[in-house]
Image 1 (cartoon, one colour):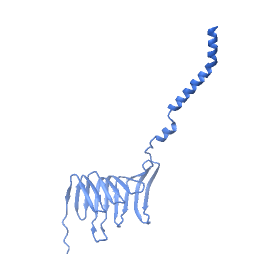
Image 2: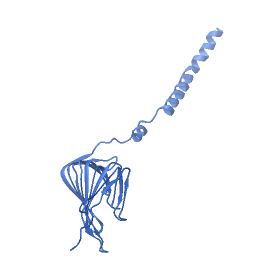
Image 3: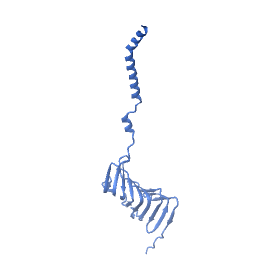
Length: 205
């Protein structure tokens, strides 16, 4: 009789104990289960193009309405994660503040959102046409050749960590393992093994 009486009391409180145990289990699961929404937000964006262009031409104008640059390419792919445009066989024309024209070609190019930086890969050639500055100083035509050239349109700089060839004027030729060129300051730093050939100036008659 005593055992039966104890069992009857236990049976009365058993549903309450089970409900409490289920509540504690549910609370533990909620605290320790990662939220799916947070996991999706933390996932890094994929490097996948969101649109393509073929046989295209893009022009960039300054605040004064003047043309700053023109880019022509065989095919272009825009990547939203880096906001860059990758171009096959790009042909680029840059117009400097002093009116000097710079043209560039390569097998592949990578351009940032506002066109201020251009990276050229594979048989890259950058040509700066001859120009006369306001002070009367003449800058001869120059040509840069490398498998990688990094152009900065706003600061008129060109850099490369790969071997470069520079042809300047009538026949001056330099080779180096790397280069840092600043057109505004008219300073070129050639790095590594540097070799140069200077042609004597022609006599004026």
